[in-house]
Amino acid sequence: MKLISWNVNGIRAADKKGFFTFFQKEKPDILCLQEIKATSDQLPPHLKNTPGYNIFINPAERKGYSGVATYAKFKPINIKKGFGIEKFDSEGRILIIEYQDFTLFNIYFPNGKKNQERLDHKLDFYDAFLGYADNLKAEGQNIVVCGDFNTAHKEIDLARPKENEKISGFLPIERAWLDTFLDHGYIDTFRYFNKKPEQYSWWDMKTNARERNVGWRIDYFFVNKEFIKHVKNAFLMQGIIGSDHCPVGIELEV
Image (cartoon, rainbow, N blue to C red; front, side, top):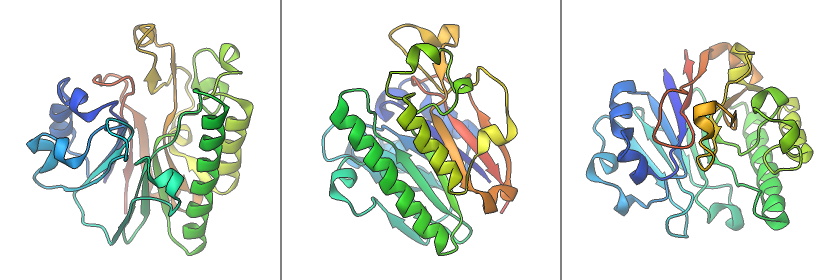
């Protein structure tokens, strides 16, 4: 089973840059998209009704902002579009899909760069997510979490760590939360398989950073440690363009 996650930075814009060709070629069992910036009504027909896929969309209340979508070949047992907390759920950042073998979180985590208020919102969102995931794990469910976390974890995960120590996305408090997340029994699947440097998933478009591979790895797949034995591979697809992020993925055997 192949799962792919991609922050498309606007699904309609990405579609004009070859997104659907990529989708048709890869044919993932599950495709999780973040920052779609569209409602269901705004999707072109081939993305609104894609043969062979169940399609779930959670747009933000604010037009042209945020939003997540999940395309899945298999019909889930249950679907939720939030944590049950209005200030988070209204931004269209969350899709939780339950299957027999695992519960999948497709999440576009907030960006904290704008100001202190948004940084606090991001950290509160992190805690709400962790509490929600931990509760499911305590009930015996296996957890798969993918999406744009908007934080690089270790120095190896961005090209210029020293220059970004005081920038949201690499602040000590954000990185410490990721430490806590792992301490709660979750595993960064990519680093489980790949310890190499210069493995990034996002590049600043304004500075043409992608051409120089001056990037950040902020897009992840995490699983609970009990489930890692089912993960056979984890990968970045750095050659795929169409967004300022590249797709990331895992291969499961369940």
